[in-house]
Amino acid sequence: MKKLLQILLIGLLILSCNNKNRTETKTFGETEMEIKDYSEEERKKEFEYLKTNVFNGLENLNDGFDSESIYYFSESDFETVLDRVERNGIAIFGIEPWLNGNFYDVLSFEDYKTSANDPKWYEKAFAEFKSRGKNLIYSASYQVPKKLLTE
Image (cartoon, rainbow, N blue to C red; front, top):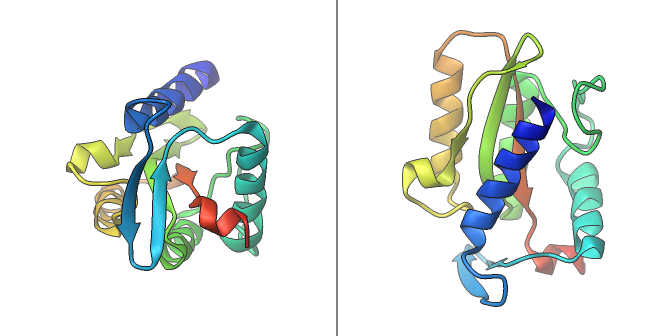
């Protein structure tokens, strides 16, 4: 199941990138999003940025059932994550809730026919998941703008 989930996340990233060598710039407020592959070093910086600026002070509910680089949050903590993501102009490619330790569902920006850095899609997706009345935990796939990685 873990491998299937990782393949799904990688697939979402690949679909959003269209072409490895092409750079598409999208503007979100003051932040420019470069939709292209990041180097391994940039991915490490991105993970550190997320831990410091987005996940800080929140409880990671991943107790080892998934890769340690994938953080899972309660509904209330994930709401905080979404607020911080929006404030920092970070893109979200997909939201994956889990129920009782099992994959539950996934929604992506493509389901809403918008860009990954449009907060309307992930707010709507999160509201949809919350309305189901399940005790879900949430993870997401993110892309931090390169501009934020150099600050």
